[in-house]
Amino acid sequence: MNIFLTLAYLFFIGSLLGWGLELLWRNLTLEKEKWINPGFCTGPYLPIYGFGLCVLYLLASLERFQWISNPFWNKAALFASMAVGMTLIEYAAGLFCLKFLKVRLWDYSNLWGNIQGIICPAFSAAWAVLGALYYFLIHPHILSGLDWLSRNLAFSFFIGVFFGVFAVDVAHSIQLTAKLKRFAEEHTVVLHLEEIKAHIRAGHLKNKVKYHFFSPFRSQYPLSVHLKEIAEELEQLRRYSKK
Figure 1 (spheres, rainbow, N blue to C red):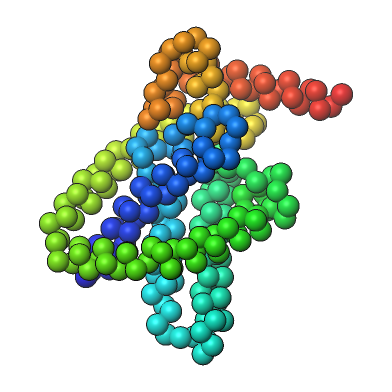
Figure 2 (cartoon, helix red, strand yellow):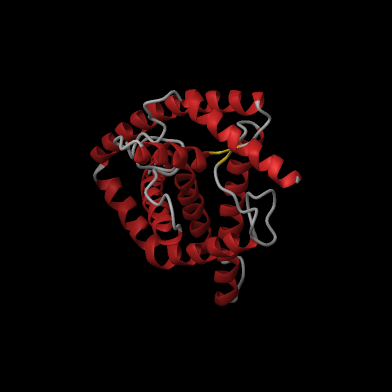
């Protein structure tokens, strides 16, 4: 099957499953603001996981070359390469958003060995574990799914629909990002995306206004109002820390 269609299918599956995994992780680990739509996009998908699944699939496909004769060490090298690949994707996405968009998507600053709060050894190890789980539990099903897709190419229509909706969503997210970047540069701050959404959600709950899960930035007030309130809170923290 065409490699482009294969990667498009994997991106489609990975983005959807990654969104579900992220939402489940938040619900199990966070004490507050569990049910907030993760990421920039409105829809139930996270592109970073889509790219991640493509990388995991490509790396797993290289195993047939048997770079290391010992099966155990060959698997260990494979899982290590998966951890490195996923960590690089995480770092590239986080650094781009931090440096160019002035927005922090996640923050590992409180974890040991972190680099710029974007990556850390703990999560790199978690990526290795997830890589192993992918290889043993998911990769065989991915291969079966690709075989099914090659015999049912009509399904590619739905993949095309997904990318159409995704493109519109990304265009909307770019407009939102431009507003956040402009505000961050004017106030010389780095905005935490999840804190903004949590702030808006808290305002909805306080005023007993319906909160839109798939539109976390939607509010009865302009986004600039929420950003100014967050900036004031940050300024208060700065003053407190100097005392």
